[in-house]
Length: 353
View 1 (cartoon, one colour):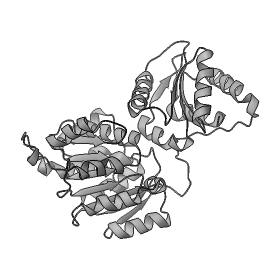
View 2: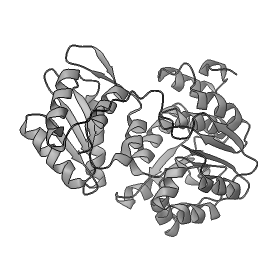
View 3: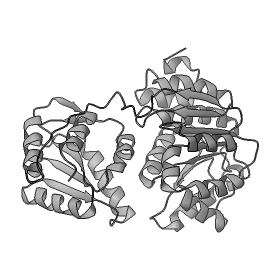
View 4: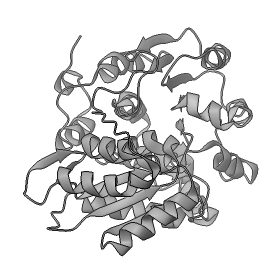
């Protein structure tokens, strides 16, 4: 089995984008899934977040959609051909950005729709016509109900992070959405595990799927280095400050278990002179996206003697941010590299404030 992207025989436009993004060797899920998806078969894949699932389904789908590529300005010439469904707004935004990057040298169009934002800009984008639509279930149904989008020419549907969508309670929404799609289509389902619920979902909507499993149940992604520190409640804040100082961390996420705890910790860090952004459900979607993008842009900048923190109020979002930031590197003040996963594990293991 080939593990090099150069051996995939991707179309020149896709191969160029992949090369410029620095992709060389495929991850296990990519090496197993891409050849199968290229044949048009249904896939039921199990892989942890951060293992390269987005490329595993996006690149072969784009390759197969190139037969529809055209330069027409007519929206009718750009119907939705591929639908990608995800459980959270942040994941949807991240996947859409990656798909756009892969398709940047093609004439295929990609759009993303999710809740918490004004529907008008999304409607304008949809009315122009898009081949690849990335969406969260609730907002997609909003657009379907007002006839902003038609899905009768969808050839491919991807249910990414399917286990999380079921956990959130999206099954009825998924069933409604799938009822709008042609019965003759390719369906790709990705999940962290093959739970009984996932297997039932697959048996209902997938046709003779190829099963690909590259992660054992409850297995931590190999890219994550974990540390655990046992401290008393009163010592948590001092432990956090000490570890950040001793490890030379300049940027980190700290996950909390409540909005109140998130706000309190953010204020404490601000008082101690650390630039801090609180991120929780009371923030608007625009505020959340701006905070995440600002953090990401600062990841590659060396800021001497300055620390930046984003405080997140729910530990369940760890997978989302691992996916969103895709393991960038962080520069310590001495100029050495620290992997993103190390930084996250330190921040997460210090304490659940």
